[in-house]
Each structure stands twice: as C-alpha cells, then as structure tokens.
Length: 164
Image (cartoon, rainbow, N blue to C red; front, side, top):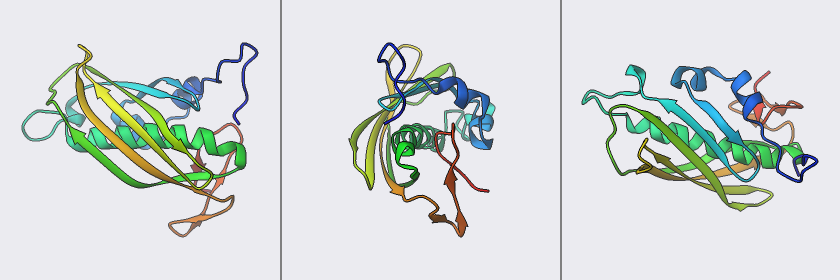
C-alpha cells in the first residue's frame, strides 16, 4: 500500500505529477488537482490543441485524459508491489460537445486486483455537466517486464514506469 500520512489521509501525488509531467500531459496542459490510490482528478483549459475540425474538443482528448488518470491511479496502487501498469482497454463515451472552458476529469477504481485493475472516469464542464465517461482496464506487469521491447522499472517516487 502507498504510504499513509500522519492524519491517515492517502498521500497526494499531484504536486509530484505536476512537477514531472511527460510529453503528452505537457502538450494537453493537464494539471493534476489530486492523485491518491483512491481517486485521481485533473483539469485542463480548452485550447486550440484540443479541438477537432468542428471546433469542439476532440474525442481523443477525452479518451486520453480518461486513460491517463486511470493509469496514474492504477500505477499508484501497483507501485507498492514494484509493478508497472499498461492499458488493455479504453471505452470512452462522448456525452456533450464542448468548445471552451476548464474541464475536470476524475477517475476512481472499480476493481484493484494483483494482475488487473478497472477504473472509471468522468469529464465534466465548468457547470458540472458530464461531457464524457470512460472505463479503462489495465494490466499490472511484474517488475522488470518488457513493454514494447524495452524493460521498464518503477522508479522510487514515481507513479509509474519510465523507459530507461
């Protein structure tokens, strides 16, 4: 289990995630609000990089954010065992078109097994209306497993794998 703070509240990894954003999170301007083993929440302000040809947020952005938050939550859970996480399935439904504003996504676990996890997420607009929902199934890899031909290892202090 992830270390628990003195007040028994789950440790919040959002500051670390924001300080160590990868290329996709940086490109999407995703800001983590909170990130614990039980819930991951992030926000982003809609910009030109998020829009498709009709001027609405591209469905791939919603699917990507949902998978990212589910992966972070699953990785936080699996890191105590030295495991890394990869996605197996992402089922995202687009409910409402959005052109602007700050969107918020929150992911929570449905199941957290030793080999697989399932997380569910919702994206909401500034008025709290659901924009997209999704469910992601993830596989927990044993330490030093190969992913796309490269061995990955969970680094201490990181929520998930990074290729060497």
